[in-house]
Amino acid sequence: MNRGQFREDLFYRLNVFAIQLPPLRDRRDDVLPLSDAFLAEYRRGLGRPPSGISRDARQRLMDYHWPGNVRELRNILERAAILCDGGLITGDHLALTAARSAGAALRDAIVAAVAPVSFPGERRPPRRSRPCRRRPSRHCRARRPHRSAISARWTGR
Figure 1 (cartoon, rainbow, N blue to C red):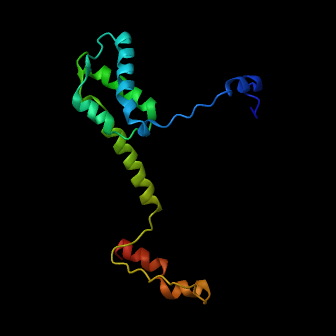
Figure 2: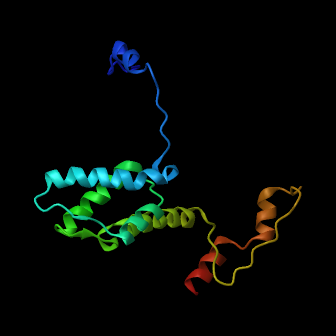
Figure 3: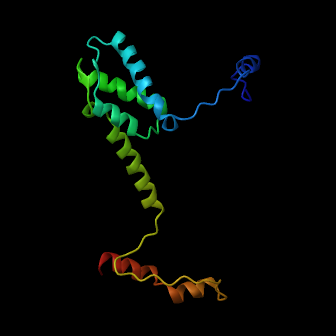
């Protein structure tokens, strides 16, 4: 509205009653009914619709943490419906582990980027509980090795 791209009168007409809907990971009981509704929708649109979802696949759907919410559920089931080719959707048709490992890989990459770099065999100076009264540059020179010494250790020179 501030940029003038949304009509103000329409905003106030739509903003009569706000509905707060918790994420799918907090509504585990809704996963299977939503899955059945999406499969019924795919049965109308696909040439060879899936016949159903196996017990293993249902359990994996219930155990998954759903970071992408209902859209992720819909996309995973659509992919599984195409892959099963008219049969029963099994746990192998669901792309849940790939989505989870991608999130874990991203989290690990962020942690690795933020973590301090240490070199093999390097001793870290003990942390001081009170602030140092010396000038920081003199303190740093006395307590830490020079960057050339660190690079020499890293390159093996």
